[in-house]
Length: 272
Image 1: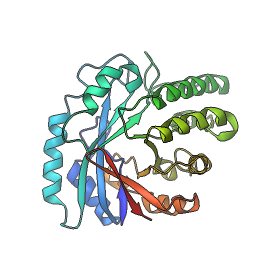
Image 2: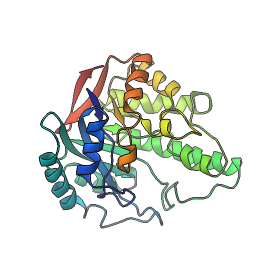
Image 3: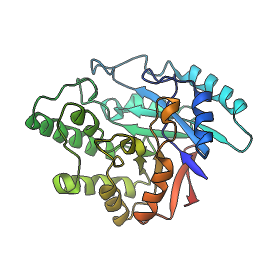
Image 4: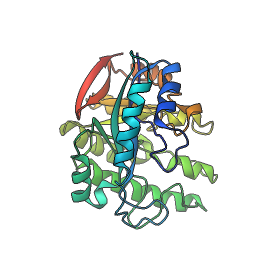
């Protein structure tokens, strides 16, 4: 049984297909347990300024989730989560949102630096420019690792997608940020939280790896990390749950015996 615990619908402004259509596409690819994690970013992606209306989408999430549960085959379960971005920028607001009744799962993400547009909006003009942004990104991941409003930290190494788009390949590795990654992982492990294996990189011909990379995931396991979810991070039916099956194979290679899922914010472990 495949799982997908990072996937988007039209409840996210950058996604293209409704929740029910995404779920049925995932079902056709073997997924039987999934959780929608539509964007709730505390900052506006184009400006980096606080977005007071970021959680206004919640009623629509609930509506589409109910519609989807009624539409999928009986042997599929669809859970309800959110991808909560930049919680380190306003912890009180993040905690308030994450405590909402009805949430099965909360991903903690970092899509932009303070008062800065999303990394997807920025343009990168030199490798030096990229290194500066990556250093600031890692410093904010360290901040995020101390907080506990979320269940897993998402797509560690997110910046690589967009630097690569502009011609600069600067992955987040144990070689360039090993000490910081070890610290992040130890914080997460000690506080009962985990990371995700984001499979979107497997669809990117320039990356052809998970996010974080396989070697970084192996290090998380070596440090004693057990909580790890798999997600396609798909925003359209063509990508729905693509890469999750390969993700399971990579988890085994990294030494994991279980993949993690969440229900009512509690981890459950499924034998791989």
